[in-house]
Length: 397
Image 1 (spheres, rainbow, N blue to C red):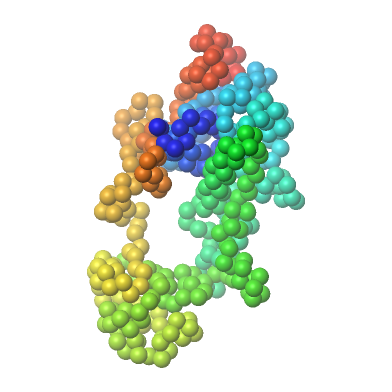
Image 2 (cartoon, rainbow, N blue to C red):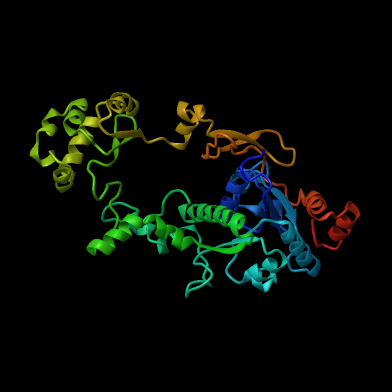
């Protein structure tokens, strides 16, 4: 079995990051994801740089494991091909502005009529309805509008975008979850349905604790840096050569003994979690002075086995390439380049470790139109001569 989604066919119209990140999860799990692109797109315009051997590393990182076809969606023959492909598909995905696919005659009402079992998944900035629905939203805008940016940044400082594209990627993960849920529902009802996921709402879902505090206590939670509103100490602290995160201290006196600060253990300003929160500046000043005595690795090896708190080294991306746990879990894998180019690039493996039907990762990004002939033959029975006619007419590539 080629992953737990073996046999599921996905017709993928997504672009940029949010949608492709969603369908990449489905491909990792064994679905046949066919990425539909425009014939006239230049290879280097398929994603941002930097480019490696002429390949967009941005595109490469979000489109592994997919097949690629090119269809002119504005031509009558192109629309007909899409409708025929939709009859064979289990899932259609797109992340255009609401109404774009409808104007092409390829929205849910049209494709769902062709295939009543179809799961049609649409990802957009603000959803298919509501006063913002016609607006565009990129990652940073989603973080801003959904509330997460207001919570990220230094205490008293400016709002700050999270360093990874959680505005896009969390929306993509919710889309993938929704597709799986709709496929499960189809097993029961026999019918497909429309899935509407908004980037803004995916960010709101991440703000669950802040939102409930507003509801319960009238708070307006804001930026606290790496501090926690309810726990102290909590966050990154400098060591002699790097940083460690200290969190969820369970045994304060033993923790203080380990860092050679017995004086802090019996200081009433720090005796309880509430007291530490009320005197957080003085407490953090003491911890910073103590932790400067050793390296991050030394503190990790000393404190972690004692089970007095949660501790972790702040790994750089370069550190992950050398981390023994990452290696043992096979979380960085070599993915070959497309177009027969020599060499590989490393990508994160799927974090879904299924014992019976493991994720299947390792195929490269699709070549631009590289699978058009094969997909049209396998899905629709279109022979090579007809594909060449469609190519000559500019309908496919």
